[in-house]
Length: 218
Image 1 (cartoon, one colour):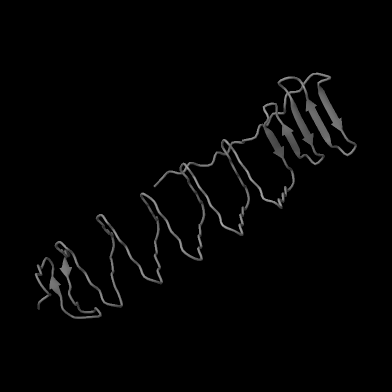
Image 2 (cartoon, one colour):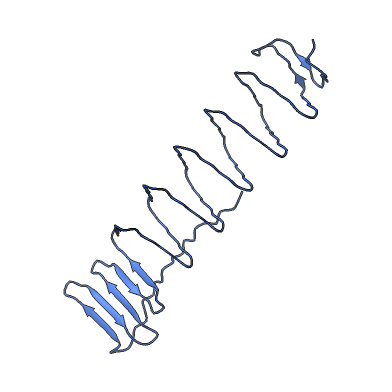
């Protein structure tokens, strides 16, 4: 199973304030209500900071980067669409519940690897068709695994196939069953029952390692 890299918990935003310029290149404006604008104008230290009375702040750093800290809730509405583009890394972290609702279609394209790690339960509900295509597929379950198909089921395997169980195995159908092979068919067990007593179809038992060239005989 592919190893999942945990999300780094280190902060991505700089904690340091922009370096202050000497007077008179440092300009501070503060209103009676507590709104504060700080402009640093020394060459190489150019920055702009706005601090809200409630503690929210927005800072433009000398390298052109921007950091924002919102003490309350942030709400944005776009009537004509929204495009977000990042030429480098893009990180989104939510400490609480998250929700994404899309009224139209969604297309997600990843050029490199993709990993989804869920610590709790995961549910995927698809109203119509669901398709998965991959070079190799691995599915592992530490507990039980159930496959429920209300319609037809078909498995087309070009290579070899094997089903190995450490416990008992039951293969049953309410309709007819056909078994065919272009090569030899081998049944191996401590005892092999054909139409065995207690089954739905018969009462005869045949010992193991019996070679049957044609239909079973009594």
